Image 1 (cartoon, helix red, strand yellow):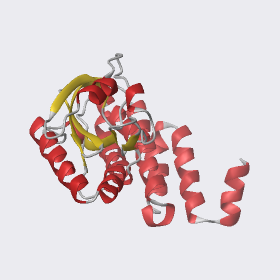
Image 2 (cartoon, helix red, strand yellow):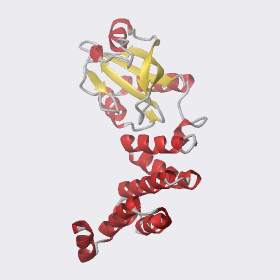
Image 3 (cartoon, one colour):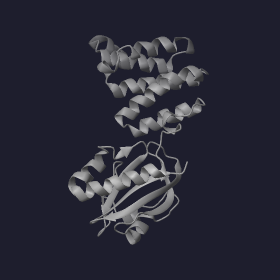
Image 4 (cartoon, helix red, strand yellow):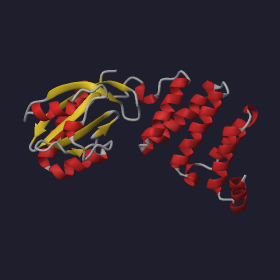
Length: 239
């Protein structure tokens, strides 16, 4: 009630958009569309792309809850696209889950939407060249996922060959100890990499790990090699 009063007093478009969305979550099925459309009408330029995507997600979820799953898909796909562009992985996972609940295959799980073994190998070879040319610049690109070093569910991560400290990882593992990284079913993948990485030779290790933006562990194979004082790897998922 207080929030509603403040919104009407200030008449800030972003606040009014948020108010309409909140009311849509609680409204009866017959007025859901009007309230969410009122919110979306302010546009991402006014409320920002993240809040706009959240409104799409809330609208789609509410439609699914009231038995209108087919109509929800359009809005959930809008949310998925918005979160994907922002790299908002936890929210992307929510959009993916809602689409699956509607019986739709999420965009990143459709054919061609994730990396193949051949693409993983090519990305690792590209990373090796980059490290040899300029290690500092390469590690910075790997961490940021720039210049194609993060492609769908393929990404490069590296660690010091000497002490195992992770030097590059686009999903937050930088600074961790490679030896202490285990697959989700307990396999000591980091220890194996430390022991077996060899300059000029690509090796494989298989373990269970979730795709970016998901919590569900999947079978994953990581290709890895030693390049200078770094161990670098790119993994692909088996399903």
